[in-house]
Image (cartoon, rainbow, N blue to C red; front, side):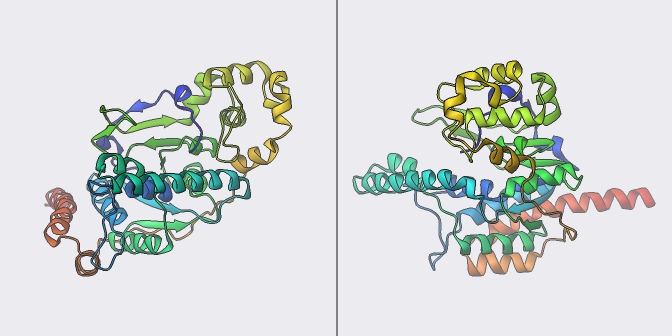
Length: 341
């Protein structure tokens, strides 16, 4: 779910080319759910190899990462650890949504309503341990750094920007700003057009950048106050938020009363929420400071063996994608050779 801060952030539209030379800490689960949701066949089924292993997420990881790497972007994938106990209500809510979507998906599929089935199928995605293991193996073969977070992946991904080990956090969720991400990048692992829910309308999906300091300065608030705004709107730790309060009202309340315990209109609802623990979760989350971040050359033989021999990928497509990175590396070498001649 994540908190809805779009109305307060004034995102800057950018191109992927603008990100050359940056180090982006990716919220891995956020990206994997994107791929599992969107990379499906016409009736909504996930792509698999001949043994039934899911490959949709591997396809997304391969082709999207190759594209980003070819632009001179360094990536760090941060994988979720144990979720916070405060997230239990949101986890149960998501399970209920997936269960209902699964029933609707199977019903639509049995009726031959493939478009409808695909819509419901996108809401049924579950990340399993074997998928994570395959994703880690693929990242290793691509030479991409990845780390295991102790808890929320986006918390550690955001932390890496505060200690200078990453320039940006890559996620669709605005929660990264509450966790302190200095710069949030959205839509970097998606591309092209996106269909609006329930409408035969498609919109362009463009990368966007949000600078935390700009958000705080423009709204004339502190990060602690931004967290309080998040609590008013609803976060993963209090998904219901406060009834009748949207972004505009939330910021007016915080600008007027400074913090949520001073807002007279919400005192009854506030007594039912452990807001101090939620604040602490964002301000002092469980994170890890990696000491051995390392990027390696692509293991092309290993990549072809894993994807093509084991997971039934097209060898021609995989080789073609690798050529994209190789051509960039060769051009860099050519430029260096000319410099030293």
